[in-house]
Length: 631
Image (cartoon, rainbow, N blue to C red; front, top):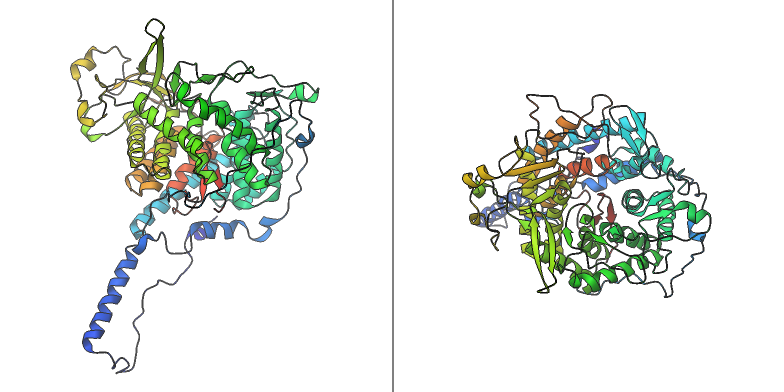
């Protein structure tokens, strides 16, 4: 899309023009009435200019203009999809369901969710000019990364941005291509999108570069990418290929307990053997299937996909308050054997291994537009327990200027003698936990609980603070902070002042910002979680501080991660170095989420708020927007 296409088309201003009327045309009005009419008209003009009634961007909405641009000319030509060499829908299950499929819940009158997004008013001209310039910068960087992938790694899973080649890591089904489909559409890159759709139509989802197909990655990147691209473009071939993938994923549920495996054994399927459930998996693996499979049922009208995850949600729902930290699930669970165990683990975190399971609890309620008690309870219970057990205020300089929270890891230590448990909070955090600020903000609106939104703001500010604290302007993958000496129940700012004596006595790695004890993984691998939460805070509150924070983050990312060898994005080896004193070193990797998530979230922060409105779309953990069905 050219810059001209992004500009608004001429529209009526809505202002009352001054009319050259003959003398006496309003003679029936008294002079006082004329003055009142003029006053009312001027007042109405001011009200309109300032965004009366909270109307957002009164010109033709961005989403309408984008759809018009993307769906003109040859864009709607039909693509002939190639059927995968295994027709997954026709496989005879070894363990067929014993009960009829669970139907999608229906929305009961009076249970629809409240509005999510802030009611944006008319945007002042100078703010729009700044925002447009920032958005163009994000789009330009995205086009460079996409061009690099297309030139050096076309149809490979990922680009190696330093060596200018590609690699397969997720079955060899062009992960970056599929993951980027909706980003291309959202940014108005019509030719690039159509070329990618044509390539997707030829993928054989039975021909994998690995005999093991990871359900989690296949679900969030491939299935999620196809569903969102279909929602946006209505290209039929995308739903066709998504349905093939959905049927493949259901093959992973073909076990005696109808619980999913972590990895589908493709060779076992081809030889007619069954699937084997792993003895132990991370909770995020089965816990991050609900949005995609539920949405596939919404689009196809076939309840079998939703029914598969309904069994999982029932297991989580009945077990949630039986764990060693009620409300939260342990990082490691077991779906193996006749009695799945999701309660006996002792480590609890919102970081890697568990993160997206919690993200999906409120989002499933949002997607289904449902107030189902079990789904709502899953959200409330986790949100309340995490606030009480996982969050801490770090000891930092000038705490009154930084009202922040950090998410740590809890270890539960059972005492068999007293039959009680003690909880130890580790102040180690990771970039992956930065998603949680956005989840709390979203839940605050969905569940009409302002306290969640306030907590989400503090958690998001904590991640923004971490970005600003390091000389590269980036947050490392994993770090440990010095917590306040006493974990005050209120987590209030005044409960923790900077203690230089305590800091001097703390064993720590040298060369780190004050308050940071260690950085055990100093990389930045192009992760999106921090900008994801900034996006949610901006769309939900409308506070400009979040756009400014996003811009600072974008400049840091663009400066540190740009690979001049190809134009792609490259992971940064060490975010703790000072770029003014030594050259930034990069790793030869560009994950598919760089275009699918990180750059998309930056772009949406600087786009008109009707583009992928949170009142119309639910974003999966890979930032793929699913269109909510009309209630």
